[in-house]
Length: 186
Image (cartoon, rainbow, N blue to C red; front, top):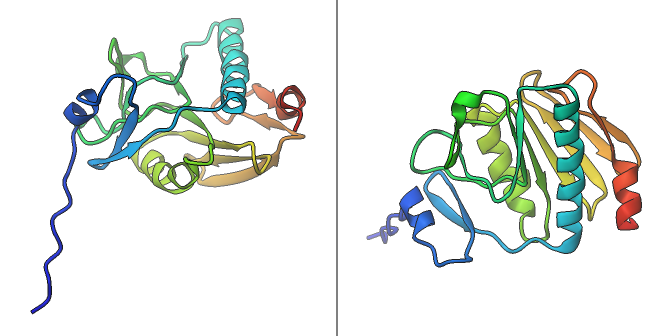
């Protein structure tokens, strides 16, 4: 007689909010994924990207709002999906509440850390694509690569840290990664 596998426990947002103070985790399809604290390089990249995006939106009097982690994104408006992207840009203000974003942001950027590689390249890639995110960037400082997924046109582009990368949701926003590489000495 074959052994039956124990059913996998399904978690909810209540489980995320019940975590001890200081412990961060994300919830994808009812499964909890612990988050390690980001390193200095990660934080520098997030800061530079957020500043560039935020300044661009302000300069253009744009309607979109950028947010930096930790910022709650409830991807499917259910209790089984909760993520904290490094940067989220939301253009539909009806998705925003004091708790975070309910529904898919227009643009998400994740900075890869050694412990987040599988999550960023596989789990989140699939989840962001199926939940309605328009554009997803994976910034990988160890590989010195930026992978841009434009889910609307089903296009994928790879860039190096020596290039400028155009944001797909804007006509004239380019981010010069060579300046970021210079700051990081990479």
